[in-house]
Each structure stands twice: as structure tokens, then as C-alpha cells.
Image 1 (cartoon, rainbow, N blue to C red):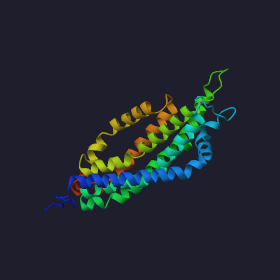
Image 2: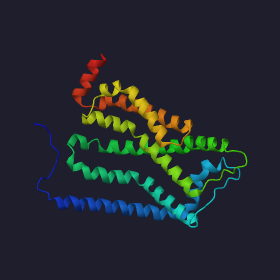
Image 3: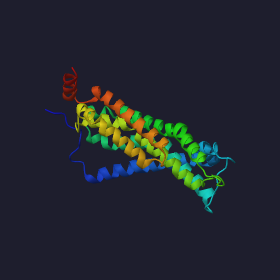
Image 4: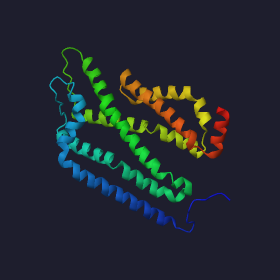
Length: 253
């Protein structure tokens, strides 16, 4: 007899809604608490976020075009930073809500997936901040026409930085997505390996659509996505279903 999730079939639908509300409330309270803790340091936070751009500006200063920009932008930055800091807790709330609908052996994978997905997201954001953004800004500053002062608005800059951090953070989740596809039985490791050329083309297409119109950032997104896919494919050799692992080992022998 196949193992079944520990579901309480008599549990009313209202109780699931109450549990969802409880987890959402805890998530909002944690976000609010982190926001209140870091908002007093918004000047240091904005200085940290703007360092890659200010390093290539002639005067080292940005400008604020909107009237309320000097207040609203640091508040928005503090809120987004609170979300970034709270990602492990938010993912834990999500996993805890869906855990009752999982098999016992699947629930054993929750903590490894939670830790690895959080670390990969932070690794992607750090890769964008320390490597991609300095190169992109140096490129933009270098192609600025003569007679034009390159001094972006703080609102546009913040939106650009947040977009890059989120895009690279999500892109670095490719190994997790690859292993989950194999583990769930949606596909096999051999099938994914056979589609490697399409994955590479898709990685460069995503890099072209989600990054600025320069080859540097597109390549810096596409190549890590491809390498991370290979990493997920490698670990899925031991992470897949037993029958699929036996088939892959037989095909590889």
C-alpha cells in the first residue's frame, strides 16, 4: 500500500483558512518588526545600496527628481530590505502550510530545500550586487556622450537595483527547480539532459529579456543559469525517484 499524506479529511475548510490567516499575520508582523528595526538606519542602507553606482559617478552623487523622493525612496528600500531579510521565515511559513498535504518522505526534504533555496537566493543577489552591477554601471558611465552628466535619479536607480537583485536571486533557484522536477516525476534526468541545447538558448533569451540592453549583464545572467542547471542535473542523479535513478544508471552504464 502506498504511503499517503497525513491529511485530516474531516478537517473543515474554514480551519485551513484560519491557519492561512494565522501564517499571513505572523509573516506581516515579522516584516513590520524587521522594517521598524532597520528603518532608522535608512541612510546607511541607501549608502550601501548605491555604492556600486556612486563609485563610477564623477561627483559620486545621485539626484532626487520627485519632491517626496528623499523620504519615500528610503522607506521603500527599507521595506524591500525587510522582505529580503525575512525570506527564510516567509519560506518556512509557506512550507509549514503545505506540509500537511505532503507525504512523510517529502516532508523530510522541507528543511534541506528551505535552507538551500534561501542560500541560493542570497547568493544570486550577492552575485548581482558585487559583480554584475559594478560592471553594468561602469559600462553605462563609459558610453555616456560628451557634454552629458551621468547622474541617475534615486527612484529609478532603486527600481533598477531591486529588479536586478530579484532577477538574479530567482535565477539562482534553477538547481532547486531542476531537482524538484525530477523528484516529482514531471520529467527525468535523462530527458532534461537531452534538452540541454534548448536550456542554453532559453538562458540567454531570459538574460536578454530581464537585464539591461547590454551584453555584459545578459551574459552574466545566462552563463550562471546554465551552470546552475548543470549543477541541479548533477545532484538529481541521487535526488530523483528510485526507479528513475535506476534507469539513469542503466542508461549511463
